[in-house]
Each structure stands twice: as structure tokens, then as C-alpha cells.
Length: 418
Image (cartoon, rainbow, N blue to C red):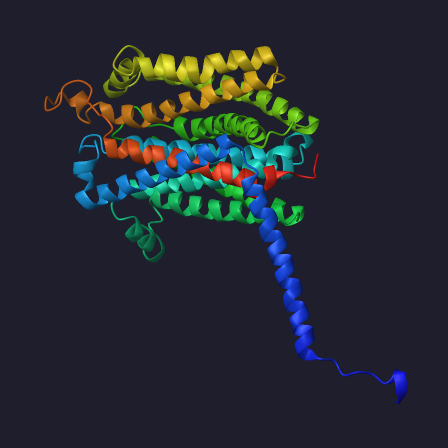
């Protein structure tokens, strides 16, 4: 063709240049908006982030130093009390993670509308807390990488601990997949992944209770009570945690909580009242049945009720962890957000000591106590070392720092499902 109708050949290099410039412009725009989002944080945001990062670094250095000098020199555990505060902290985190998974699944898996607004944040926190738990247990196990290797190439199918590690690993993967689908707004596949995570989490968690409950040599733990107790207390922990971090998230972003989120917290606070009641019921019957049990169990209960662990039990566990939060939840009816935040914070503090007492007190009575062996008389002592406390703080700071970053990166975990 001639004249103005003649087609000009396409300049490939110019086309690629235009596409490249368009990509760079889009990338730079996204990068700039993300950077502005981080820089828009308040002064307290950066202070908390810096403090959390320093604690994580210090705790990691303490854990590596413990590996260097040897755990028997760095930790306060002994041959008689071989599970210390690191095990109880691991239990605290994985119990919380399972509880968050259950709370989130009530909404987007089972379709209860009032629980849907907290789904994304609850799933994110379930991932954060299980990672924190694995981080703490990594520094408790002397050869963690060898454990991971032999878990695959030499599975112990009759070992509860093998099943716990395997099921929790699967649980974490399912929760990550669920969170990815939630971010992509693909709620169908998020529901499938959430259901798989829920089932594997409950299986792993009840199995964790069985690790304690199937130890014949430890009367304080032995029996069918702990697997059931762990599930009930997990849901209680999950309720407290999501209330605490949701309130904190809105304070960090300085946003006003919308009505669907307020209704969600009201519903969770009511569920929390129910779960506190159930846990108190289980604790009462544990004491009643234990006092007519074997000599070792009776001695452990005496140490808990009137002995060296009485303050932990009556003040930290019962009063701060259960009764006062129950009263605050009940009187506020979930409508006063500041009140239920204080109640949830008290619960988390008390629940931490609840896990600590469960783990340590179960070993505090000598194994051969009922046989009259006099090698160790009375309750065995245990005191966490500096290295152990530093690693516990590492887990706490890792959770807090990840939460703060998550609120910024995922913009408060907003959901269109209200």
C-alpha cells in the first residue's frame, strides 16, 4: 500500500523499552506506597519494633551461646527435672496457636458470621505463635537439625513425640496455605485449607496432651484428663489472644474499630466466658480425683495447693488467669473494649504460668517417692537460668514484632466479609 495508509513496521526494541518502563513505574509505585506505609507509623510503633528486634537478637545470641557451652551448663534443668521453662513456653505457644486456629475456623470454615472479621488476623497469629513455639523448642533440643532429619528418614510411628512434631509441621503448612488463600480472597480453597489445619491442629494438640497423660511414671500427669484439658484450654487461650492483639492492632494503626469487628469481639468474649467455666470445672475435678490418687499425685497436689507452687496456682493461675478475667468479661458483657482487653492480657499472663506449673510440677515429685527411696526428699527444686529466660523472651519478642510488622504489611488484616 502507498501513501498514508502504509503500515509502519513495529519497532521491537521500542516496545520492550515501553514495557520495561511501565513495569518499573508500577514496581516503583508499589515500592514507594509500601515505604510510605512503613514511614507512616507512630513513634511508639518504631520504638516497639526496635525493642522487639533487640530482644530477638539478644535471645538468639543466648540460645547460640547455650549450644556452644552445652545445655547442661547453660540451663537450669537437671536429670530429675529435664523439662523446664523452655518446654512450658513451647506448650504455651502451640496451645495458643491451636486455639487461634479453632477461633478463626468458627467463622470462615463453619460460617458463623460474627467470627468472620477476625479470621485473617487469627490465622496470621496462629502462624506467628507456632513459629515462635518451634523457635523456642529449637534451642531446647540439643540437635534440632538431626531431629528434623531422622523425623523423616526414621519415623517412630509408636512415639507420641514423633506424631506431635509431624502433625504440628503439617498444621503449620496448612495454616500458611490458608492465609495465602485468604490474602488472595479465594475463600473456597481457604476453607479447605482451614479445615485441614483445624483437624491436624486438634490431632496434634490432643496428642501433645497424650505425651504427658501416657507417662505412667508421672502420676501428676497420667490419665485421660490432659488431652481433653489441652483442647479446652487452647480455645480459651485463643479467645484471649485474639481479643488482646485485635485491640492492640487498632491502637497501633490509630483506626476506629468498625461495628462488625466490635460484634466479633463481643461474641469471642462470650465464648471466652464459657471456656473459662469449662477449664475451671476441669481443674476442680483434677484436684478432687487427684487427692484420692497415688502418693506421688497427692504430694504434687499438696505442693500446688499449700506448698511452694501455691502462689503460682492461687494467685497467678486462678485469680489473675481465670477468676478476675471471668468477672471482667461477665460484667462488661463484651461491650467495653478496654475492659475485655485488660481481661485478655491478664489471662495470657496467667496462662503462661499455668503451662509452667503443669510441666515443672509434674516432675517435682521424685519418681520413686511412693517406694520410700530417700535419695531425694520432698519437692525437687528448679530455677530457670539466664539463658532459658532469654530464650523465653526471644519467643515473646518474636511474636510481638511479627504482629507489629503484620499489621503494617497486611494493612490490619482487613476483610470484606462482614
